[in-house]
Image 1 (cartoon, rainbow, N blue to C red):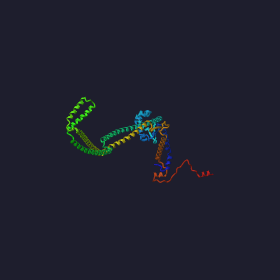
Image 2 (spheres, helix red, strand yellow; image 1 turned 90 degrees about the vertical axis):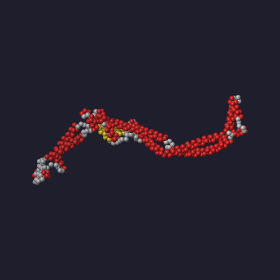
Image 3 (cartoon, rainbow, N blue to C red; image 1 turned 90 degrees about the horizontal axis):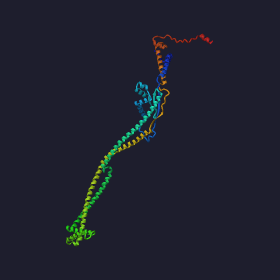
Image 4 (cartoon, rainbow, N blue to C red; image 1 turned 120 degrees about the horizontal axis):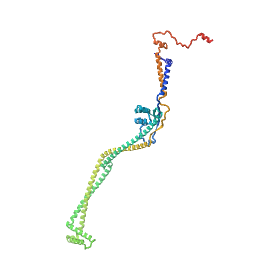
Length: 477
């Protein structure tokens, strides 16, 4: 095979077979131009959308939507490209009518997904591209998809804010119910263990001290009363020994009572009143029955009788006081026992109450936290409803493109030139392979290594003529 081994040899080969290379290149360019006329043209329109930040500072109202713009755009893109939305866009914009008629909706949906593109140009700007054979439909569809992006973003943010608020509302209701139940348990426990709570420790101690002082006073009072009782009993015994018999004392008592009653009746009635007459007769009878020796000593006996009655009455009252003091003593001892039991039960009650209050405090903290979050969620929901949160705004609407997006003329021409040049080089090398001539001595010796080269005749150019010495002298003369 006669392949050139050096760059100069390669250049000589191209120059020798230049027509084999030039013709395919020209044909490739002609084919590219023809392809540009035949290949259907596609137009690509784009809409630029700006992501506007929240109008109210986040220090005052924190948004509930915390996902990044890129994540939300990818989510919205998938929602826009679902079957229902794409079918609606195809129907509204009148796209792919021929494909729908021939292949059905699946082919049209496949083309729509391929021709719809989203490109994020930073943290706050992105573009929506749509490619179509009709440049007007390309621009209209891009604008329509941009509107759907804006609507879907508003709907998604509103749904997230509403769902967050609803979730927090439900959680708050559950925690509130648990808090009320726990509060009821704590209240019932406090009521059931009243007097044994940690807060009652000081009160129990004070009550025990007071009861102990009362007990000392009570015992002292009982001792004094018992001593007084002994004294009175002795006095009563002495008076009873000095007084007349019981019958005489009773008779004297009746006479004195009748005389007192007579004085009272005479103050109200005359001596002719039946009751006054009856009482006079009764006094006369009692005086007749008065025992001997009663005359001068009657007043003394009456005095001693009154003293005896007074001592007996005092003794009876004192016995009642002693009974009352003894009852109070029993109550005081019972109170001391009760308060002492309360003090002994406080550590156990304190531990149980600590567990109940710890659960209650946890629930209270959860309730307060959820209440704060619910308020913030409601503010965020109102922010979304009033369109004061982060929004998508069309920064640059799509217009019908002036030049087609596909095919690219430069790319097609380069492909044509590349294919033509490749075919030309291949043809030139192929023609060189089938050529049986020898270009130089080396190629000849390579082909026939055992045949010696006797001489070399250089290439004779018929257009050049050898100038003789005579002709040269003639030119000089």
